[in-house]
Length: 242
Image (cartoon, rainbow, N blue to C red):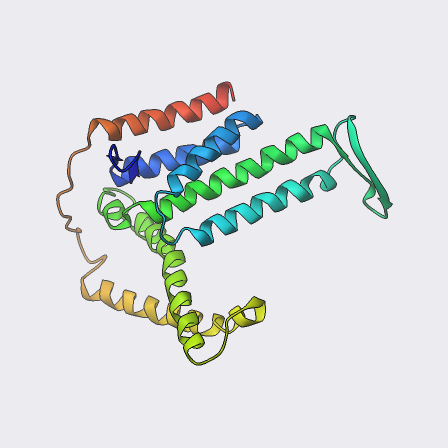
C-alpha cells in the first residue's frame, strides 16, 4: 500500500498496512468526538482516492450508508433538551423532535460508519492480498479465507461491468433496480463456477497436504515499523483521550 503523493510515496508491506487500517477502524469505533472522527474519516477518504480505478462503488456504498444513518438517527432516539425542530406525534414512536444532542450523536455514528467503510475500501483496493497471505506465518487458512472473501467484491464488480456491457451490446439498457436485477443470476452462477475452479486449483497444488512453501519476502523498512507504532498509538489515543 502506498501512502503520500506520487512523488513522495511510501510503500508499506501488506501486514503493517493491514494492521494500520484495522487500527484506524477500531479507533473510529472507540472515538466519541466529532472533530477527531471527521479528521480520521477525511484521511481515510484521501487514502482511498489513491486507488482511482474501481473506487466509485465503494464511495457510493459508504457515503449513502453514512448519510442515511445521519438522517435517520435523530428520529430513533430521544436525547437532549435543546430542541431545534418539533414534529408530529406518531403512534408507538411518540413525538418526533430533533435536538442538538441528537444531531451530535448522529454525526458521530455516521462518521464511525464512514471511517470503517473507507478503511475496508482501502484494504480491498490498495493492498496486495497475495503478499498478505504469503506473509502469514500463522493462521494461514484464516488469512487465505479473508483474502479470498475480500477479492470477491472487486471480482463481482468487474463481472457485473462486463455483463452490463454485453447486455447493452444486444440493445438492452441496464437501468434501475429491475435492470440490474437481471445481472444477479449470471453473477451468482459465475461466482459458483469460479469457486469450484479455485477449489480444484488449490487441491491440484496440494493445499493443506503438508508444510506450505513460501517465496522470500522483502524485509520490513522503517516505514513498516512506524505504521505499526502509529496504529497502536491511534488506538491508545482513541481509548484515553478521543
